[in-house]
Length: 324
Ligand code: 5GP
Ligand code: MN
View 1 (tube, rainbow, N blue to C red):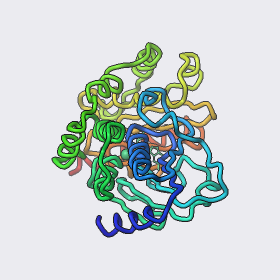
View 2 (spheres, helix red, strand yellow):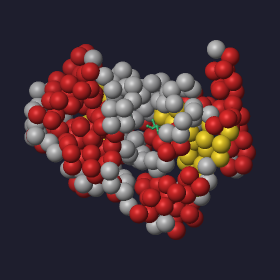
View 3 (tube, helix red, strand yellow):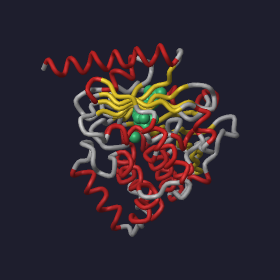
View 4 (spheres, rainbow, N blue to C red):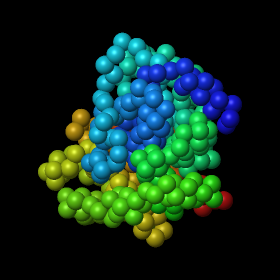
């Protein structure tokens, strides 16, 4: 860790204009890690910015996100720091803006990442990019303030499913304890992220459950909500996610799949596993990626064909389980 952190520190020391970016369709960890590092680097006098062209309204209350920019209005800049993005094709930045960077630092926690950049720090044992960023900010010797601490808390909270998932370690909890000591309002963050939804979202949950199909004795639960339904509920693309967990929660479910239509005409597949099936393998085989228990991809062909292929692949993996 320290070798890569040291290399990154040296680049930061000689950089002034620094941009933080995460993956497209940012989650709490993507926003938490980029915005936290933005506040830390501003504290040491850097000309820091976050690039984040679109995000769900649920994250609007987070500090720093409203200052995020969509494109880089400069011919060149010193440094791009990429967080929570396993390959540079998924970054929320155009390749043109990516190429304007003199240096690129990658900080990521995904398994089977595709390393890129001058510094490549990948640690899949940590819960989140936010936990990496927590370690990195400490390494840079920059104190946490209420903003950076709230953001790092958010990233760890969301990527661990509120400390439910097995990626939560004692180190995660120690980091959280330190962030709480900064004086953040964790109750407010939890209320906003875990305990507040719009009525339209409640209706989307109902639709998802209504459309649920059950395969392999309840081991696979699948639901598809088309774009027109989502649009008619007044829900934007970024706010239409998060449905897979409801399917996964049902007793006996090994794999849950939620497919949603998007405004650009594509279909986004979001998968969750109960832990026995490594769904990142499935997602990768369909051109996507992710973690063993949370993965996704975009369907590129007709939904009828793609759905059958997916159900068959899950069936093969489930039958391998029962053979063990
Ligand atoms: P979600 O279901 O929340 O959209 O995505 C779960 C995880 O799967 C994400 O954290 C990300 O790692 C991965 N993922 C989702 N969609 C894609 C995709 O299209 N490509 C890749 N490489 N990973 C994805
Ligand atoms: Mn993450």
